[in-house]
Amino acid sequence: MGKAIKRKGEVALKFGVRLLLGAGCVLLLAVSWIIAVNSKSAADKQLDLMRQAAELVGDGVYIRAIPLLEEAAALGAANTLAAEEELKKAYLALIDSRGVSRKYTGLLEKQMNRKDALPAVFAEAANYYLSVSRVSDALTVLTAGIAKTGCGELMELYEKSRYAYETSRTSYDFVAAINGSTVQVQLDGLWGIANADGTLLIPCEYEKISTFDADRAVVMNGGIIYAVDRNNFRVALLRDSASDFGNLSENRIPVMIGGSWLRATGEFVLGTVLFDEIGMYSEGYAAAKTEGRWGVIDIAAGWLIPAEYDGIIQDELGRCHAQGAVFAQRGSSVFLFVGGQRIGDVYDDARPFSDDGFAAVKRNGKWGFIDTRGRVMIGFRFEDALSFGQHLAAVKKDGHWGYISRNGQIVIDTAFLEAKSFSNGSAPVLTQYGWQFITLIEFRKGASL
Image (cartoon, rainbow, N blue to C red):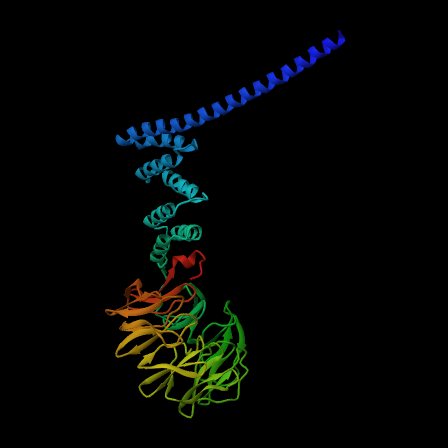
């Protein structure tokens, strides 16, 4: 009898297990059905909310349509993207209302942060920011979009937008070419140093001032020549009787003593080699004239290009050498030297290369651009031009100055009376208000050009 009872218990146990397993399967199916129903209901609810919103939008009642579309977009179901698109349209209809622009840009940010974000979203955000003069935000969006999608259309929009600039309120009587991140400026007949964007660094109180280099500039005040730092404190005095000086660079400055030029350090330690004239050092070289002829010397006064030319082409600061290249002049002909060797064609005139980009050269009355191999990169079609600096070159067309990019297209309109090269994101331009500075907004936000 005990065995019978035991068998009945085992049967009951097996039956209970099967019952539990069956119930579990039923419960699992029920849960799956509930999830499916709820998911379908969420998508249906989105469509219902969107239909209600569409009726309100048709009546122009956007203020009541927006909450419905926000609710639909928040459900996260199958129609989320469609709901978001309708929501953005509603936001734009009321974009001038308080807080709506923040909601609109917030939704764009959400869309752009998705892994599968489409280029169109970045383009929409950039165009909106451009429309409200938030160029820096537009450039940030485009940079992110290009990095994420590699879209060519975004690259084109970025190229069109990246040359937007701001104009300084400060103006000066005259401004030299920018040297790195500083520039010599003149106001009421006296000279000082400004940052590249035109903000004053050393006040305009000197009869003459050199370029700012190695945390100092050489100045003349009351006929006395000495050096000052960025705080306008005197840091060195030239004790020898000098009548003039040039620009300071690479711890060398030309000084005129007794009718001849010689080189001195920033601490006014004088060299012994005499020259008729000498330019400003750049990349370790400077133009120098001796016995009536010009050549190019290194720091040790050795000749890279022998002194046998009528002139060495220099910019207004006296720089002649960049990217290993120099232009020398004999009679009416200008020659290109690279590494001390003559290459390329003969030109009527030229501007020295800068640290990067092409050099401006003149032929048959027009200016174009060449690279350091002498190849013509931009045709001869400008009235005047300066060499490229930071991928932009100042050019003159129809009597006014503007800027071209490396593809030869004018990207900053020819609206200036004069213009100088870009450096550190800024360039001096002459307007009806005097010499002012334009600074690329892209550079303001910290991008390298």
